[in-house]
Image (cartoon, rainbow, N blue to C red; front, side, top):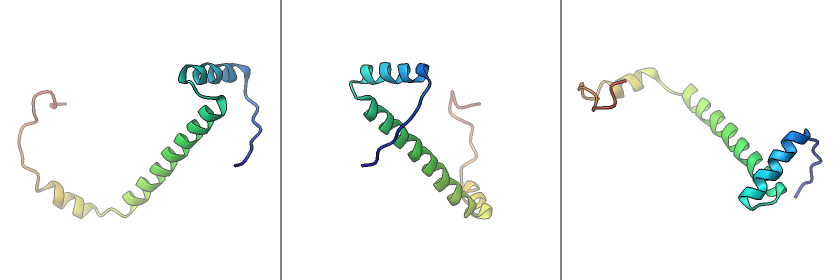
Length: 78
């Protein structure tokens, strides 16, 4: 496991400390989890962008053209 020395403004440190206490975890666990979530979000975005670049618009339109033409359900009008 790697070690990282991190300097944070006191206000952020205070919030981290408070949230970690509310969640019942250590500050290290909270920060590790937050970083893991951010990495996951970035990797997911990159994956979806790469998939979108391979998309074929004519294939997409062929699929959408198969959808029945009907009024939206109540509440879905917008």
